[in-house]
Length: 460
Image 1 (cartoon, rainbow, N blue to C red):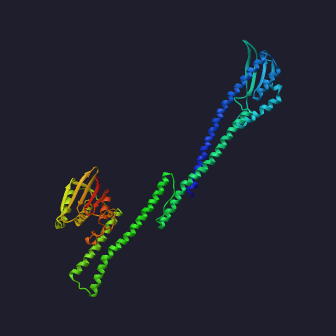
Image 2: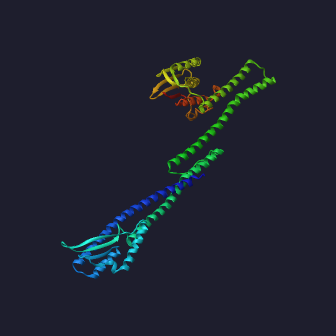
Image 3: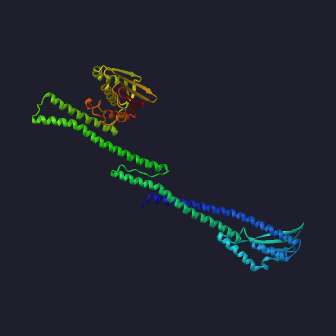
């Protein structure tokens, strides 16, 4: 049978609290009884000592039967029956004979009280014989009879009963308070969880703007709320990216496809002649579409972490020098000075994919460098990382565009338009490759002064 979290927490808290308080009360009762029994034993002994003192005084100093009876009745009220015998063994005073009815009235409650508190109590009488010696001469005996080894008077019984009642009332009040507190705590725990369930259901329906707005001082509840809100924000952001990608891809494909369509319709209708130049233009647009689709496929693989990274040691210096050679024609055309400073010979990573990263960055540096400018490529070690820096003296990037430079299809206006070629996702792929290696890539640029790209890769 399934229960709500609030109900389950309340019941569990109630059971644990009830069991705990019951054990505490039972132990308290046992401790109170033990301590009280010790107190009663000491008290009874003091009563006996007082009776003995009074009887001896009356017996030796002045024999007064009325005072003896008064002492006897006082002793009887404390549960003590006394008898006095002389030196010959003759009974000269016996409480039982003197006040038999009174004995029954006073001892009966003691018997009842003891059976009430101790069910196994049998009410056995004990007798204590005390010599009434005068100097070295034994002049008689005081015989004291009482319930042993201890007994409760009516006052004692009333007192211990009151203590037990207080403990039991305390238990009941504590259980009620604990149940109320348990319900409140369970509510504080379950409410945010219930809200989280509602929000996640709304998110599943596509309402990505839903958020949990529940304040709680519980770390786990706060982390749960923050996690669900972060999930919603991430999904909302991803949905925005998805819509933007669809719009961007549609826009990027529309231009070349429209150009191909217009030219092909003109050729089919005979409006244009299928010259070599026209066919070459159409072919270039087809290549552009094909390149864009290929780049998008690569990007999707990197973003979903499907693309495998084959890490191994390789000579980064040779790779950089080889890549620089592939740009030699463009470098010479612009009279660029390219300097390679190799502080590191070998690094750890996927050679092919890191080569693509360097190609993408160096391509931009060459493409946007001014005539007779310079490009510097440096490699170095920095604590537990390898660092690659590519710095140029190109046209630079406006500060407002830097935060978005790694986003797909993002192009800086004016200077970096479609006329320069490229699909607009080269830097996005570059960033994904570096992050797949567990590294970081940052770009620092000033408009009109140039750009510096810094790649940091872990050594292992």
